[in-house]
Image (cartoon, rainbow, N blue to C red):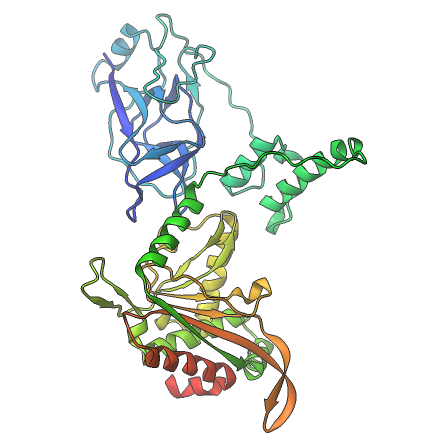
Length: 445
């Protein structure tokens, strides 16, 4: 007889305790192969496809879309054939399957491509019994159907992000009818949102009346996935870290002139963020106390030997903090290339867990939002964060005369347990001096 194997949600890394079901990729009664992705889940870090280490017939699945599942809780159960007598045992159980493989070790939990081949289902699922939530199991009927399904050429839809697909499903948007605004026609979230707005504009315009529409009841939006993780992390940072902030205005005219000079030469373009990242790595070499974190029990300070530079980036799932590994070993051009690659991955929603964790210091360029200053909450357990406001033309005293210069505000938030104000002020002043006189960096190279 077949053996029923229970596959539980594995530990997806970095101390995550659960994940939200985004989309089921198999149905009860379907025949699956070893390591075939069965469900798409959203963790606090990324959206991943989870492959099942068993091949056979799916007999149950647990958790509806949008439901949170804890690590170690059941995901699916699979009827797995024993190594000997596969055909006889499955036939005796009323199941005829084209795929019946024995148990194999799990391969991994990265963002995977679904395996090719045909999907077949054994029997039929009774109406109203989707096989989700709790221990709901759909058994194969006594007389099973084993019909070959002729594969149909799929319609290739240029969309990468599973969140974009989910939004389209929820709003009833046909992705095949959309023209993507991203690179090579890639369909972005904004494209789906425009389609939803256009679809809603007609009925709303037709139903417009002169009388004001009364406000509806307040709604409660549950904290899930990324927003829940951000809320918990920022709450912990605010509770545990005695943070302080200092700031200074800096004349960035020379820095911007240097950037224009660098970009006039052949080769990759250098961004302002790359220049600021390079300044940060040099400053942290002079003030290593700020590239540190306090131990969990608060009994010591960990001085990190490498600078893993986090930076804020806007992605499909909101604001995320990708990490440039070993930033202190990279040139300005190399920093720019890696910052560009990670920013593109953030926009496409394809960042991996490794690219979102392990930072030791954060650079936050909130000037892209058109604001001058901020007092951010530290990215726990990091001890420091440099914030950069917009670079804007302002009246400034330069060379003893009033002139119009390109000015930015630099703010620095730090954990007061790792250093005193003198160290923090020294770091910020050095950064400001490098922004005003970027030639100073040559002394550090």
